[in-house]
Image (cartoon, one colour):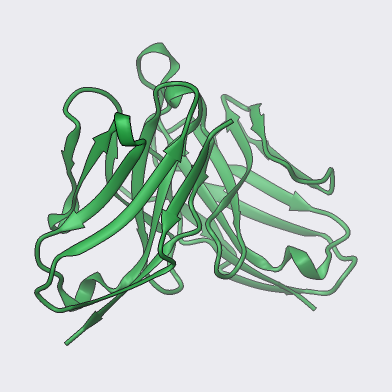
Length: 115
Length: 116
């Protein structure tokens, strides 16, 4: 079985500060990993994905994440937070290395950005 | 190209009623997945359809059903609605690549269902 744990349901940073959102996964097979962002009353937007290859992946809006197999982690970072980054962020793992249309999501982390 | 579209945007139903939610995938995408997102939680997988066949089912009761049409659009049906079915229902589409990899999923804006 696969699962995702997002550490910290709520993260607050100041504008311009580093953003770090934590995600740990459990998977018996090589995982495909994703970060999505959800703004209020909207659907989910893909920020970035890891499938194979380079373990440091860059996404949209200046976000990046690093796949660390030894730590079963896929933390999301951004060097400098912007007010527009305030949203809900979800980490997800794909079952069976992407051979399925099922994503397993974490509980989400709300990012607050203070001026 | 247009993204994933869903209708209706909002819906209010009474307990015991039936509801049908609709989804149109991105042009060229043949896979549609449905998710339920209860307030304050991550989305939970309900169904996946690919080429009009069910490819996956989550841990939801038989009151939930879905189908996919020849144009790859999809419907999610929920019978005998319960208060606990109140949620945001999300549809996502994806293309298929080599070795059956379904690729990243692109989500629609969702349908907000309220059961009273």
